[in-house]
Image 1 (cartoon, rainbow, N blue to C red):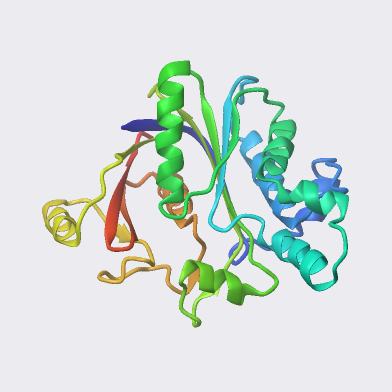
Image 2 (cartoon, rainbow, N blue to C red):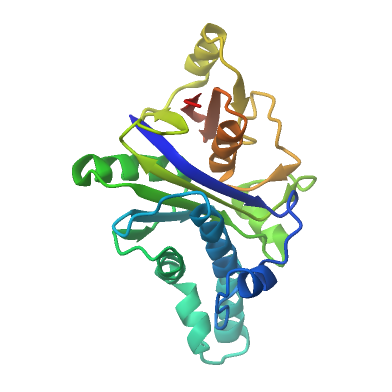
Length: 267
């Protein structure tokens, strides 16, 4: 399967010194009330994309995350089970994944298909497969938002993601606008639904001449991002490759199963 990247945007909290709420209000004149940090970050990434992309009203929108809006989940749990109080209205609204999707769609002024989905593994690749299947039929463009926000108690995030205590979890949001049309595309993204074994990956790595990078989950290989991690890192590494117009192969791993993403620059 192949998708073509028409535009992209990226933000990482460890690399970019930005007061997101302030920038949304002052630069983009965006009303931030009744929204939390998770939604603010998602909308900020959307605004960055909008500066680069020709966005169509009927573009499809997909949003995915490693652990979702974990702080509002924790807050709701504390309110109900520890304080024995009713959930606050806007905490409940922000708890819903489709609330984030709604705010992104509103910021981008799009009315197409709108889906928030999280997988317990390979969340970025699974979203790519969903996008490919959908626009293969609709012939439309699709926008993918991948977002992870550091919890106020990042020990929980590390435990959920099985991350080493020495590693730092960072907040990030990455967007791509995809099409099945290669015309004017920045890069080609190739992937499939197949899972590979370790021996198959070893054979593949030995056979390729392209640069190969590995997810922090690939314990059998050396990963470059073990110290600064987030679940949707593959989305960032794709954007980084597009930024420098460089071909790349990225290998992700869950439970000893491997998947491959190939990035080919078209600049």
